[in-house]
Amino acid sequence: MKKDVALITLVVRVPEVLAVHTSLPVSSLAELIAYAKANPGKVNFGSAGGGSITHLAGELLKAEAKIDLVHVALQGRRAGGERFCSAARCRWASSTCRCCSATSAAAS
Image (cartoon, rainbow, N blue to C red):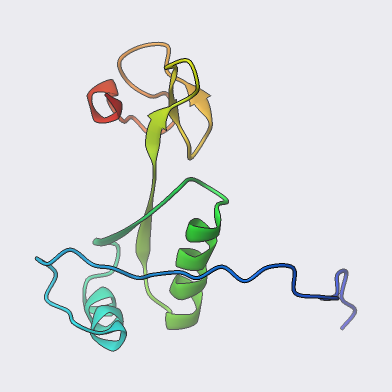
């Protein structure tokens, strides 16, 4: 099989931390994976936005553990106060995001 790209060097190491809400009945990574397998599509993970290192780390966890987690990208404001949905980098022209249906109250 021919590869189109090849790893040539490590550019950066980024420490990642995995934290869960105290209401989730898990206390280890193994328990989290078991819980996610028993509840497919019902466990969310947050990130700084689509394509961020935290998003990619969550996607890697999903792939390696073979679990179905739901990515929730940060909703915030651009410089100058303009609201945005970081998952799609859209502008909110009204009170609801066109991309993810989030309401502006969540971004306030």
